[in-house]
Length: 95
Image (cartoon, rainbow, N blue to C red; front, side):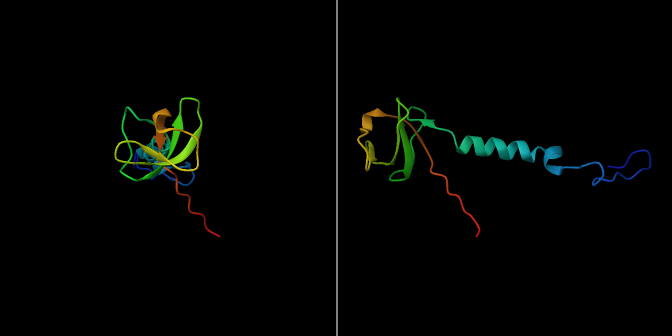
């Protein structure tokens, strides 16, 4: 932006395009949305998608959505106890 015949020095002004255009806030909002627990009343994951499931006591386990219920492996949690679910995050690290 040019004003009063001066060209701004974005480096000296600590310019951040992400803040100027809202990219940073949008990115943070997207990450928070992706990491939230979703109520089974709000929606269900795709058929056979492996997700984390949680019951009303906060106990969590991995499970898959079957045709009529959640399939929970390696846990004593029963399908009818599932109150929330969330996608499993994939973290890629560079060595």
